[in-house]
Image (cartoon, rainbow, N blue to C red):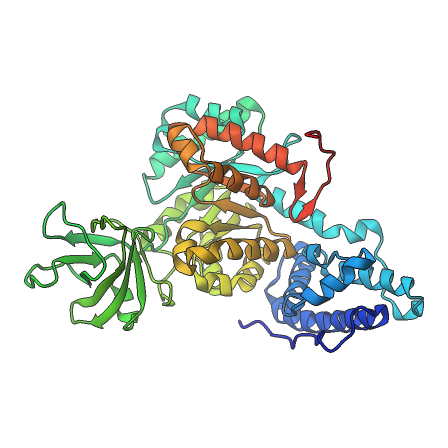
Length: 506
């Protein structure tokens, strides 16, 4: 479903230093935002079954309309008037615009009947309450000690070691992730039992997040000259549909693809990244066996070609069912036992509708209102994020995960910082909680010593509603430190808004 694009407000031809011209520009902007926002919302309206989400969807539509304009000159012109709040309007687009217009209009003695007026204080902050309500619909009641949640991926030892789970809860974990790519229903059931028991023993609310594996393209069988052979820039790799053969010595590196149908969707010069971006390649030709790749990026010491390593196709829209046969089978257990279902490689609203349908089949007439977390991992998912949000949150509680591992490879590392900000803003406008994920405090969890950069990254994660940690030998210490960082940052920052707590360092 394409999003309507507005014609940007022409601000360059206006003298925005004149408050009357500035007021006119703001009123024109409001009219444009309202008209376009209503058009977007009316297209979405039939999809929304939760009345609770109607106001949120409308605000999301207004936010999209607002951000189709380049507002930099307008924002700068408002600063001398003490009205530079457009940059913090995500959760309340029209109330914020109305407040700015009305205040400026009063300052220049504009006709009161031409001004939209201010909302009552409670109505002005309604968006913040709607976000908090959705947070609790996904993650449960908020702790009195900390607003943000901490999610931890559990190892399979948690099935047998209750003390491992209990200690994580005592350190501050609020939600536990089970990766359904590993183990089986028997192990998952034992893990869930220990989490429920730890929650009961501590009196803390703990949710079960079960992450469907999804169609992760990987290398399968691999052929190399020998076990120590490394690939360098300029080398060639044959990516095959079937088991790789070694009949051609001019192409010594070969690997089969876990989803061979992807190879039929590729074209010459399409980039392919292997092993979380460690090996960069491009398609140089299509062959009867598969595709021939040329290596374009490795470390100076080269890289080994290994089995079971991820494949990313950043410039190709891959047409795969987002649920594998394993996912369909796992859902019989997951739908009944999980509080939250993680949806890997979701790319469109139709993908969301498929999962919703499969969940409903398994729950039948159960009143359980299970939450979905859409994991944003591809360019296509970013492009379709507004429609993904509306399809999902229009029927059930929704969270969005910024899955920075695959996302960085798909869009480029240099764009990741920009894009994670935009996802945060968009989700706030829809009053949808965000999970900040991938390699958060990874050095600390693995070695017991954090890097300086990852402490800053963890602090940035406070602007999301949940921060996800992966497992590691020092995970208890990691949860404790993250808990401390989040508490400190909450006193200073709420989303994009500084809290202006008194400073005690000087």
